[in-house]
Amino acid sequence: MNSRGDSGADVAIVGAGLTGCLLACYLARRGERVRLFERRADPRLTGAERGRSINLALSERGLDALRRIGLEHAVLADALPMRGRMIHPAGDPDGELDFQPYSADGERAINSISRGALNNALLDAAQALPEVEVFFEHRLDRFDPATGALCFDTPTGPVRPEAAVVLGADGAGSAVRGELLRHDATTETLDFLDYGYKELTIPAVGGEFALDPGALHIWPRGRSMMIALPNPDRSFTCTLFWPTSGTASFASLSSPAAVQRYFAEQYPDVVPLVPDLVTEYRENPVGLLGTVQCAPWQTGGRVCLLGDAAHAIVPFYGQGANCAFEDVVVLDACLDRTGGDWSAALPLFDAERRADTEAIAQMALANFVEMRDKVASPAFKLGKRVEHA
Ligand code: FAD
Image (cartoon, rainbow, N blue to C red; front, side, top):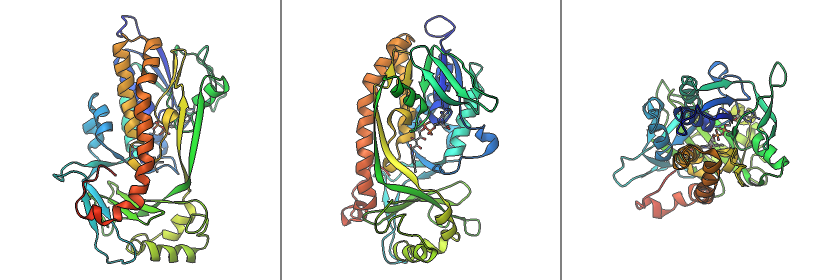
């Protein structure tokens, strides 16, 4: 029984990523019947999707959401705490590194965690609950917000379920949001940066980390930067955040010699650590970076967007997934406050949550300038306390 005293609404969640899986866990605990639809095959069987960030930084905001349903310890088992950021200076491969702790006592950390492992842990948790059914290889194609009628493409043809409540947790390119737009039920603004990202790997050396695993590493280079986060297999994943066009951009480095030359000049200490530099640089995709805003998130008290589908942000504050997790906590609280009445809870969520997500979107944009430029300034070296990544 749920908080209304009946046997629960019939909730469809589109997207079994980080947001959708955590949402399913929270709603099942309320006694809601949940169907979770995911376009991919089961990632626990097929492995991670290529082209997505391999790891991410999980901080207190996200941990709090996991702790409330007893998942914190399972998720943190494979996490690597990063107690500060390590600045790699330009020019000199033997230049002095500058460690800037995240807290005055040096104890507080953000956690590097595998996106795939986190998603799998949340899927396991959701699927273990009897209220949750998961459907893989179901790609939302059409949706009528007025009736709750959904249409999914599947390997065996279209499937057309209906649901009393539909929650869109299908990421920045949300199909649910697309359908709300098509039915004039929302408006959206997409702001893409003229920067993209590309990942490279620093493998373990002799079975050990090639860099200090207790830090988030940053190579600030003024207009652009590279960062690296540690992985449990003792490798690091580097992410280049570079302009997409113009000089010193992804577009301008077209030949292997140009790639080698540029890295030797800008990231000299990294060159010996990335044995497959040219191959990875040429083969790994360039991802887009942007901010998604849309309003309203909910319509008719029965359809709502959460996580990146509602408010994707640039990754420079390391807060996209953390905020998506916090969305779930806030929606759960809205359901508490309205006695589990979705038609009241969804407008309340939309009204109360929006300002916080707009604030973090602005802070994430501002932190790009801090990370790629200001962290190298003497003010930070003199021990100025740094808030976050
Ligand atoms: P997604 O992770 O995009 O999941 C959406 C799910 O919906 C996917 O499983 C997808 O397959 C499914 N789906 C999509 N379309 C359909 C459809 N039509 N039908 C059915 N299913 C569908 N955040 C942090 O907190 N810390 C970090 O350090 C961090 N680093 C990042 C680094 C980079 C380079 C990037 C790009 C992002 C980073 N983020 C970070 C942000 C974080 O990745 C996102 O905020 C988070 O993944 C959002 O989760 P989500 O579940 O809302 O969306």
